[in-house]
Length: 212
Length: 330
Image 1 (cartoon, rainbow over the protein chains, first blue to last red):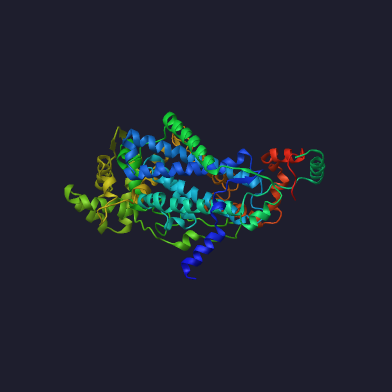
Image 2 (cartoon, one colour):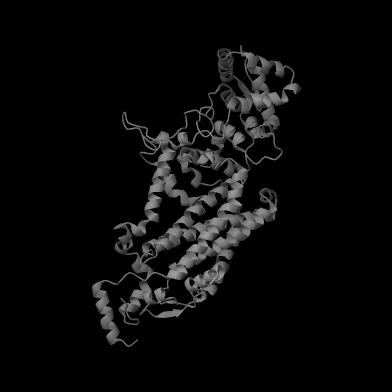
């Protein structure tokens, strides 16, 4: 068996097609909170699309073009939507103890995605080429310098921040989102916490009395 | 279904679930919301300040900043790493408790990586570049550069006093005559360059044609009080919840709320104020690591069970189990 065949076999064993796109879910996956994750992904798609348009026309376009300003506004509100849904997703995952039953890595991948997203947004604010970017850079440099990061990650260097924002960090976020989704699909959605003893016994009794 | 997942779901009924439809609906709804927000509320775009605008709106402050860069009394001149070996902004990851500490500075350990010589970069260098076009400037620069440090300080000190008595009329600055040697011409030329917009270009010049690094002019602006005043009018100062805010009535980086909160509370705004940035980042890093590795922290990893919010999340499922409509599976 050559390397390609080995990889092929490994992928088909660990990532079967029907697991990545299942057509059925456990019956408890029936709550609005499960929409927060997919809404985060939808916001991310909008961010990428609006971001690509902005980068195609260059960082100064949106200051002088009505269409450009609209695209920037869409990018701006997509960021707000992205973090809004992502934070809701994070907290509902927390309150449901989503890391249980061997899902620790799924939780960590989500947390890392959140942190890298914060950095991506920060570099976006620094790439605006307006007063907001100037002030956030001037103020933010002190925190970065205080922990030695500013020597290599210069908030006042537009070229570096723009490169991070449109190339390096989005690729990392996209990869992390992909990893997170794959882990969710492979390990499945965590089961609800067990009912307390009395309720569980009541449920058993009910199951005997009420035909399903 | 792979065996492990099949075993995990054993005994639990399943129901049809259309992931693709869910994504498409979510995309349609979020797109509609974003487009409506973009059309109705637009987005902030407060024009950037320039050294020209700053020098015109506050000529006295601009010259004061330039003088501070020249004589080494400015904020950036004494900042410390990564710009120079000053100490004014060096922060430590540990407060001083009585005679003990401060403990450890990563900032000092990393050292100078973006060298900025304020006198040369902000005053002498730009003036040298245009010296041939301003009568007497070459001689003034030669006089200044050839003088002793004591003489240079005497001139800049005298100019500082005279600048304090200066009068401003619009964009014009009248500084009383003083025994300031070449500094008078140097400072009036700097102001002239600033107000004509030349300083914006001169601070960006280098051996290369293309420039995308605005570190030097932005550091000059950081020393100028006019920039902070402009930021204060938008509630952007650190004491006003800083980077979490946005110009105009727009949401900013609200997700930084915890980090920004620390700057508003004791001891970060009290005994730790001199190291507030380093301590705030250290605190947030520790809290983030706890949240990230909560699955493996005994006790904390059971917190959601005790908080009970999960009862709301799976309310429908529990109701159906209790009613016997679906079986309970251990």
